[in-house]
Image (cartoon, rainbow, N blue to C red; front, side, top):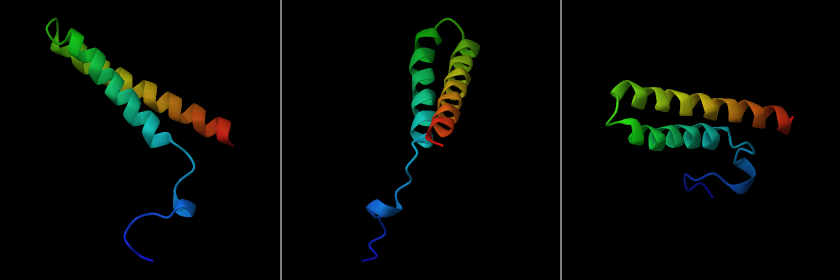
Length: 65
């Protein structure tokens, strides 16, 4: 049954990409509040959210082992 979708047994068990994407979206949302004040603060919030997502992803990877 090859329909192009992953079967339940083939799905990755970790949610690292979800943590990174969630942190990035969180930084984007916070950055919109600072956009009127400074564009650099907006970019800084995005980078900070990405860093937070990477940190959570590494913690999740360490806990799952």
